[in-house]
Image (cartoon, rainbow, N blue to C red; front, side, top):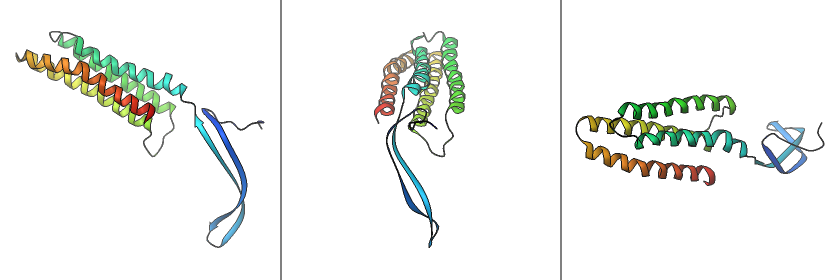
Length: 164
């Protein structure tokens, strides 16, 4: 047994023990031992190994907005590569994190990031379609809008994840 209480990925702030009656069935009391602790999770690992790579993949999807619309194949390849990379990242995450019956903040962040990458692919396809049908001006407006809106929206998601 260790001399101090420890849990991986956690800092134990305080703990207390006690004896309390245990009532498995109403009217039946048994002796029981209780243990309560307050803890704080170390998040550094998750920031460097989960959030940072995920953010890089999301940012990679935005590069499609900066490639000329005449290179539709390259634009779609960048957006599709981002989606595939994100799916691979999600498989790795599924093997690292415990399966829980509820959504955590990290789950919402990964779902939000996935939707941003999917939306980037959709925008690339829409602007490619517009350009192919001689509607260059609307396609250019959408690209310029996407260059600012996607980073701003993702930054808001990141702030919510970190401090929300």
